[in-house]
Every structure is written in C-alpha cells, then in structure tokens.
Image (cartoon, rainbow, N blue to C red; front, top):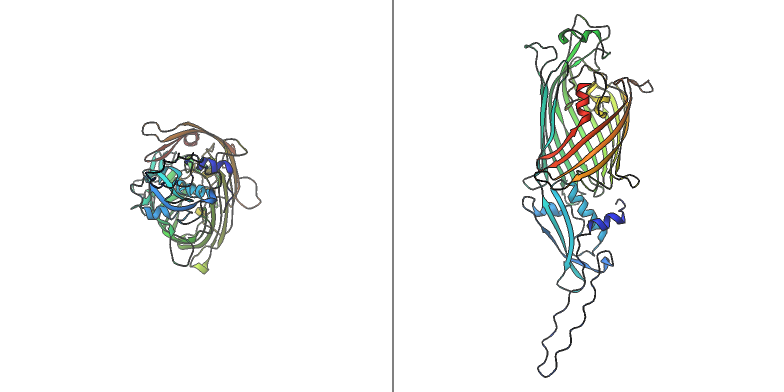
Length: 476
C-alpha cells in the first residue's frame, strides 16, 4: 500500500464529525429517590485520536442516484466489523474520487448503537459520467480542415463499466475526389473491477479500431515534392483493422498489472509519384500483412483527483513484443516509461511529466514514436496526430524518444454556473528523439523546447483544454 501523508489524512477526514461512545439511556428514577444530577458528557474524541478503539458497525453511502451501491462498495477498503482505520478511510475516499463518478466525496463517522461502535458515512455527489473525451479540429496545408469527437461512459448502467468511442475524419492529401478520405474510428469496453471467487480483483477490456490513412513518404519534411500539388508527392496509403484484448489484476488498491494481446490486419500501398526522391517510403510492409503483439503493463496511480490533483503520482511501465510467434509479420520490441506527479512537487504547485521510449526491430511506423505528440507545439511542418492519424507532411517516426517538462497550475474558481472548476496552467517541455538508437536528434521542430498557456475547465459534459500551444501548433 502506498504511504499516505498525514496532511492528506487530515484533508480526507476534515469533514468528519467528532465521535465518542454512545451514551446509554439512564433508567427511570424511582419516585422515592431524587433524580440524579446528569453527568457531564465526556469530550468526544476526534478521528485523528485513537480511531483504532472503535469498530465499524455499519457503512452508509449517501447521495447515490445512478451508481449502484454494490459497485461503489467494491472500492471501499473498510468492511463492517473492522476496527476503524483513518488511513484506510482516506484510501477509500481517494479510490472513489479517481473513478470519475463523483465530483465530491466526504467522509464522517456517527455514533453507533453501542459503546465503541461507529457508523462510517460516505457522502457523495454524483457527476455526469457520459462525457466528451476528445474534441479535435485543425488544418494543415495538405488537409485544410479535419475534425473529430470522442465520447466516454465511465459508469455504464451504474455498474462501473466503461464504454468509449471516437471518430476523426479528413479528406485525402492529394485533393483528388476519387481518392479515399482518411478517418479513424475506435470503440472500447472496459471492466475495471471484476470479482472472481478465490482470485484478486480482475481487470478486463476489449477494443476495436478501423483506420484509413496516408503518410507523405518524403524523408525530408521540406521535400521539394511538397511544394506543388500533394498528389504528386510520394505517399503510402494504408488501412488498419483490428483490436486488442486485455486481462489483468490489481495487486494493490491503486495498482494494475495488465497483459494485452493485439492483432491488426494491415494493408499498405506505395503510390508512385513523378517527384518521388530515391528511397521515399515509410516503415511498413507493402501489401497485406498482420501485426500481432503481446504487451505487459504495470501502472500505479495515487493522485487524489482526476481534474486538479494536488498529491500523488501516476507511473506506467510497458513492454511490447511483436512476433511471428503470436501470428504477426513484424518482429520488434517496444518500451515505454511514463511518470507524472500531481500539482505538488517539493511543496510547490508544480507538476512534473516525463516520458522515455525506445523501439527495436522492424516495427511499423505507427508503433514507433512521433515526437510532435509529446510537444506543446512544433515550429515547422510537424503536428501532433489526431487519434493516430497524421495530417501533416512530416512522417518521421523515431526509434527513441525522451521528453520532460514542468507545469504550474493555479485554481481560478470552484462551482460557477455550468462550470464545475477551472484552473490556469503554464508549462514548458523539451523533447529529444532520434531515428536510430544512439543517433543524433531528429529535427522534427526547429526549437526542441515548447511552452503552453492553457485554461482548463471541468464541466458536466467533460474537461476542456483551451490551449495557446495547440493554436500555435496549427499555425506555426
């Protein structure tokens, strides 16, 4: 179990009422005897003082409307009959906040029916769990306008099940009406807590993908072939259809260990062009091929809030192997490490973000790292992808990537009309990449450091990021 800061314990239990032993009802006094003077009530101890002297008689959930009580109780680490433990109460509160089902979770205790027993109360405020996860709109020289939308239901039927989907659509960079348009469509289902007798809590997920795209294949983003019609530039048209199946377990309340099998059917065609320079191509097998890979993931997330966390961190380590042993045509390995702290670093409201990734072997381009995905903006042709679709003229996917940054956050307001919360974020990031391990940095951007000024809003239909860095990425 991750260590818990005393300040967090006090914060989580700050709404708790003082508790004490139940006062027995005195017997009816005899008519012949004078009524005894009432004894002075002993001061009730607080939760921070001797909570282990009390036993939980009942756990009460208040404020539930859509979420089913049985599903919520899965995430409470205290059981009826247990000795009251303030640390486990705090961890239970954090788990409930991380679900995204509630905008507020408060805890308190009430006197039980007997001395030494208490009632543990979780008071929750539900939020809308059908939310917008992605709003995509942008434009580039080969694709004047493109857009998309992603939706997620985080608590389907009140049973804690997750459903998600998204679509991004754009035209062809050639501008020819007979060329197929580019698009990406995704669907997903996720069960974060599955109870099986005799086993730890299991995690299950399945997702599907259908994507059709084009990569402009000039190795130089400023290739002369891009200065005329894009239909004259070397291109690789491809299509991906498949999905993945995930099964895992939770070794701790904030940890997950996952195994994922992924299979995709890939079709790719190199389009000849009159202005194609020698060796113009992207890393992919032409014709029909199969991608089959097995990935192992370890994740821990101890942040205390999904929108503006002040304590905790999220870390992820993932290793992927693609091989003919699993039924594929690509032999490669892929490694990824990610670390993100909350807005609390060394006592300051600063968040650290770090990414380290490497690929070895013959991975297709979409399994390699695209540096612009990790920058606030890139000065030049590179532009962050939209649901894995690249609408820019930059097709330099790299085998190694390192990124790091700091972001300062300042809360601006709480509940304000339809807005739940909002804060201002100011950040800076640096990204280093190379086409081959040990090679020099790929100049995906003329400036490897980028910055951002963003207003982030928490609303009943999702969280939104009004980012100056995103606008710069489109226009620079």
